[in-house]
Image 1 (cartoon, rainbow, N blue to C red):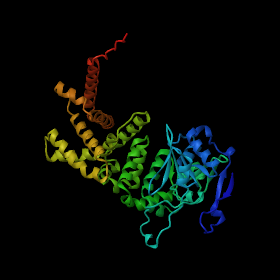
Image 2: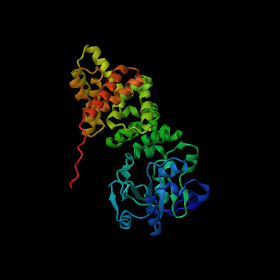
Image 3: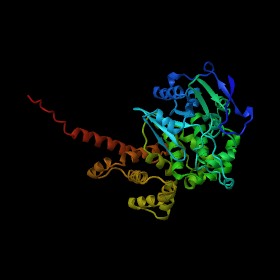
Image 4: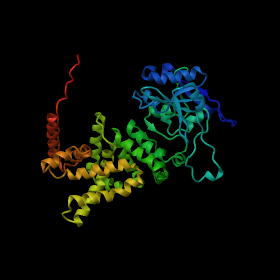
Length: 430
């Protein structure tokens, strides 16, 4: 392990101690090129042979060091986007706020970014620190410092196969800690979504959140309302799509970050008011971990279900003997403001409505065979049955309704397959 000074990209002189990087030589770390996809290596080597610095960066370095399979492999370089574009004919420049180059291969896309530094701020930007432009190029040191967490700011240098650390990320990986780079109060105001990402990494990696980082999330949790709603919704979906949803949402509730985001849901599940919700997330995690594909409509319906159930029970207490049509209208009107606030696409909103409405129809046992037969083949049926299964197995309610519909659907689909005409064999022409 050695230390290396990184030359700053500006005229300002930085203290030598600040600019020193910890460099771990090839024989002192566990990263092997055999675990890096061939196309990623091609990009790294071409940049290096063309005279540019070429580093594997971000979460892939962290995951390789901890023997996890990286979700993706990103590359950082001192080549500017147009220079990268000229080197790779199979590439395109994307983004405005943050210009990147996508190098397109047959089976993957390799994302390449230019080293950046924190953008300069005008004096009147002191109050609102939200970043709206991030295309100011810099050095590797400056690029590392502008990243979100220390464990995401490690570099793997293809020139000598060393690992470079400017911000203490190696120590945090070793001690299993999620820590913000720099002042967490400033960094969370710059990009409030970083608070959600801190929770994601802690849940996914089994790491703890550094106390200063944790306290800053608590202080600035209402800043999340300044973030782009589509970005926030995508982060929520990403938590639900993975096997660590239960731990992530437990942290979101404990820290209080879910309260400004989804106050309706927070109020329903805080203090373990809906214990079956946590069982649903646990079951969802096992299902996803087993490789089963769950639609976004089902995932978001799982999140909304405790709130909808509570509101519907209160409404039924005021209006006894509600008909199924009235229940469906109530659900649709109830969720509309929330899904609008989340800026979900119209197709996803429609799918959520259809999934919830169909699930409530499934609470009544199969009736007229012809109508029920057609019902099984309606588009939202499978999603609704999957949601009912999660709810029934987690809450112990409506188990019989789920079993009846599952059995009925299996018989109907098997009968349809048996009744389907066999494909005609073509006679060979002489």
